[in-house]
Amino acid sequence: MRKTMNYVWMGVVAVLALSPAARAFPRAQQQEVASTGKAAAFVGSDLFRSYCATCHGEAAKGDGPLASMLKKRPADLTMFSKNNGGTFPAELVGRIIDGRKQVDGHGGKDMPVWGDAFKEAGGGSDEAAIKARIDALVRYLETIQVK
Ligand code: HEC
Image 1 (cartoon, rainbow, N blue to C red):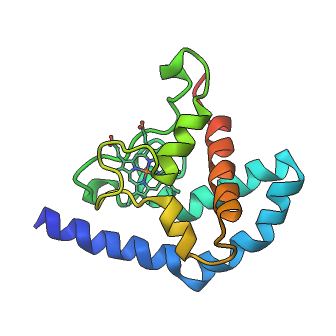
Image 2: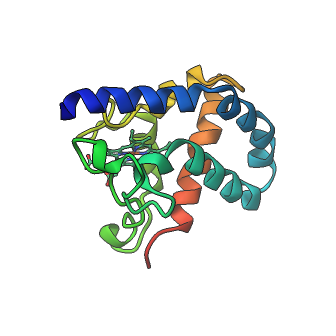
């Protein structure tokens, strides 16, 4: 039963992520990402709210509305710096998000591989556009680290 629910919710998330609304916003915002670092943090928070908060929660504490339906609890994403001697491991976080770095529970049912998901979401599907979105997410996560 739990397993079935995982698939059901994964479907819900996939539909949300690929919906026209989700598809429409990143294009305009990519330009902002390119131009100012400040806007990039703002963009990252939008991306986070659209693609990640359902599982990880609005405050990235791992307590989104879907969290309790998942077999594995989504991680608290505010502890990277603290757990890494005060330095935010940006490169590692980027690799986790785009799926190059395999971690437990990723690329499976519980967390999509975003490098691939963004590729299919339109609004600029080339490598640079995908990287811009992942970078924006990474920079946003850096701003919400627990000190
Ligand atoms: C369908 C639910 C779901 C969605 C949506 C989701 N995640 Fe996750 N995420 C998880 C789960 C489950 C884990 C695995 C936790 C573990 O293995 O301990 C995880 C782990 C992570 C990790 C690794 C944390 C660590 O400490 O190693 C990062 C980084 C992460 N997610 C970022 C994101 C970002 C950024 C997004 C949005 C682009 C996102 N996640 C969307 C469920 C989700």
